[in-house]
Image 1 (cartoon, rainbow, N blue to C red):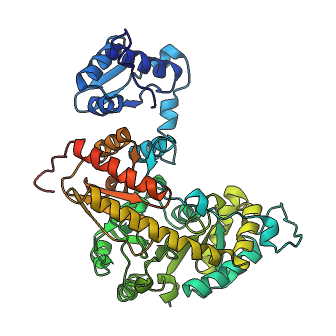
Image 2 (cartoon, rainbow, N blue to C red):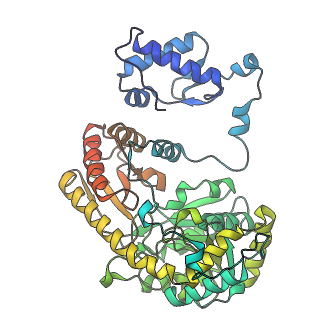
Image 3 (tube, rainbow, N blue to C red):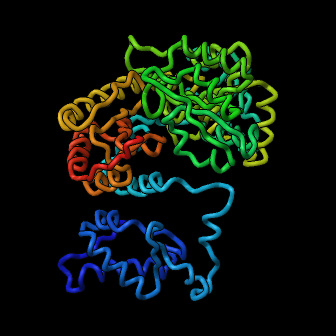
Length: 485
């Protein structure tokens, strides 16, 4: 997608585009049946007018390489499979149980590899904020062997003891090591829940908007997703009754502390009310607490997690070290009733025979040796300064075009444009301007919303990124919303 036509070459630009797409088709990069971008999107990507792309598409249609149908778009001709004598990979890649990432998500990931792009979409810690996990330092200079064999299905026992102590000290959650399953990150925990505790056709509730809408794993499991209404203070517990009666909800997935992407924090009163409603309906709650430790304002500390308030074993609690230590460590945990943990541990063992023993040992040493606490002492001031820098840049460059929240924690700012722009159009305009953000449609929001992340780039890049984004917004065409919206 980095290719661009040479406007100074002798060959007409439309022929260059047609030749480039033909090479992509012949090489298999664009397989038969693969959809092609709309003419307007491709024109913006290549920096040409729409008529040029239209002429290129016409060349390819005349050659029998692509097909178009009004209202259905343009795609690579499916008849090429017989000519090329190769497997019908399009049928394979669009089939299978696990669905591909959303097109917007794929485009963000693809553009994120470009080093010239200022990435305000990447929800990872800046390189300088990732601690060096030197084994000798973590062990205090002592020699300690790492067992590289398979570990217990639930996870390395000493790590589970360390996680149990960590949760009790920092989150107010009192659980034994037998109620903890070590996973390869929080996302694997969600995957195990969706595959092992739910069945195709089951209905689940989650916040709207929600980070989980960007994950294909729920749709891959055949689950039906329904939004639990929110306001500025998070989900509205009483709405669970309506949703349950209408759709027979089987499980609720929530991110109540520094919610991704809106940044809302569910009050303790609402947390208790929600637990009461779910207990009465006998619906389990899955609590994703990815950002709970990242409180940035001393006077706005969040309430205890749902799991800490849960007296009826209704909550499955998911946490990890991804947002505090390093995403690449791939260590997460799932806390729940012992019977549930044993069921999921059995499934995990069938999947991968357990999370990396090296990662588990490093995580244990980090939790036992005080590294996590030291990391938080340097991470919170860093994120606070980054947040404030981005807020100042927004006030300078987008005051007239948008409004936004001031998050009390996490690493995201939820922003709303005064004039809505289609997510794909906004994303392409931003990429052309050299900046990346996450359109709200990724999270199930309507056009005009976007998430801006301040944990990855330098403070100087945050300022420049917002300046570029402001320019892209002014150039992008507004979307026409129907009266019913």
